[in-house]
Length: 442
Image 1 (cartoon, one colour):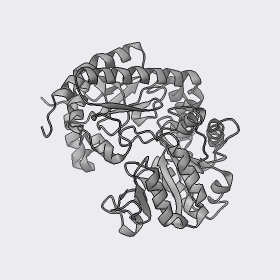
Image 2: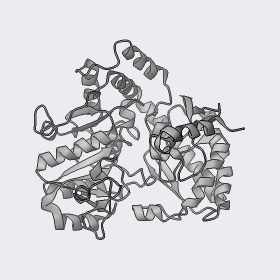
Image 3: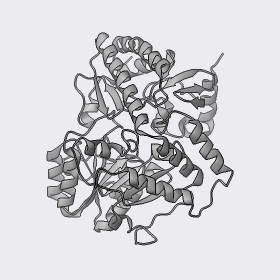
Image 4: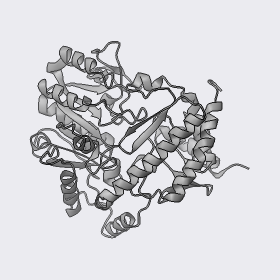
């Protein structure tokens, strides 16, 4: 007798490429059948076969408050009674833009003076890059190996053969001339940054960076590195694009930029991109920045961007409700839950004798199966990643859902209470022993 998830995956593969609509969902790096989710509430998700799991994915971040928060759901339902889409301005999008701008501040420092709402993180970063090129009149972009900024052509670039070498296509379908406009360098490497600007500085439009890397596992910036990026870019007439699609409003009320500013690392990005939490689980993203840069967007300026569903009223309602409910108490609860789970994770792996390092970026964290925390993409790849699949499946068998890749962050929510945390803690030693017993290539 097959599981309902198996049946759905078989059916999906006949009509959807690979059976999924986003690659990591296919369980390619952990094996097995993806869980087709039927519902979610609070800190748990339920699959199509009726199995309930304590969730540590949180829809890849948006469920800061927990799944299906009653007030967020009510806001979306109320908005739906007034229409699903207008293709016209609404009062709600003005309120959301104001709320974003008001939250991203530290003292008198306000990097977001204007906000443009879009539908996806990919669209936000793509627009930010076009805007930076329009503002500087330059073509080249600097990005970091292992950082993910969506799937637009110029961002799917693989590192070239040298520190300051133009990139090669990182995906089929990306023209080589487009990839060559991106320079890919090592993360957390000041020397690589200096070298790329020494060779190409007068042609670089922008540096784009995840505020804290979280798509090669969590790899935080070294102290002062983000500030160095801003200083270096500005010294050469380039812009800094801070990608907070994942970290924005999740790790702090003002995002990772706000977390760093509060810790004494002040710097001024020119454009910040937001996604995930800003839409409360609905399709919504945004970019914001200094007025003189943002006002180059049409209709005021020559940089074109448009979208029929930009500022969709249902997404705006979800985003407004989520941000308004994301109080200091919510961040305190999420931080505490994340600290408890990450400590239990470290203890379980240590007790099982598994080489590991748990890295943090605020309340985001992940484990790498190596003795020291990685600082670059190459170091993140140099781990015993074969241990993650048995770890993942052991957790799932104990009723805990993890991200289906070792290169993803773990997400806690404000809905993870005593019972859910205890279930996670009980599962971790079992999963750690499974990881310890894993053999390479098996």
